[in-house]
Image (cartoon, rainbow, N blue to C red; front, top):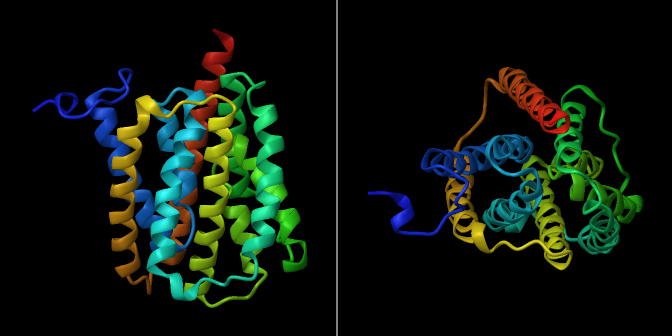
Length: 253
């Protein structure tokens, strides 16, 4: 049965692309839940293979709300509440400024910046933000997320300075990411982005992402972390190179 006969999906996406993105949401949510980080950046790169660059960050943000919220709910007892309010304030400010500039960037440049940011998370050293400066971390990371989408590694560096237990780290990181993505999606809506054509796809990707989160939480990682980091960095690097090639192709057309 053709999937388009049941639910309306974006007309520019093939059935293969739709299934690929749904499974990608589940897999990358599993990665984030099992390893604490990395899923958002991988998912951003996989979305970029099929989505129009102008739809990339709004759709990514909407799906990541579900992924991070699901992870937060599963670990709600471990969420540390003290950074939430200052981070929320900072996120509102940063997203507002970022949203005002987002509409002025051409699509090829957005792809190039996304690729550059992902490569930075792989090969660069992301600065840690001390707790007393968390409002500024919210401003800066939320400004970045309007252009780059997957600022999870940056926020993880900020949460790392709180010296939490592993479950507390993952839970608190998920709570802050949920806040940031909600604000980002609202800002994208205010500057004119319509989620209508992508609504059903977003909902299904959120559901598949929650399944991935649940499986990831149950998956006990006791060995192979060092190998996973190598594999993760390799995947992110390949995805970034693909984005750079696509952005150059679009920019030269």
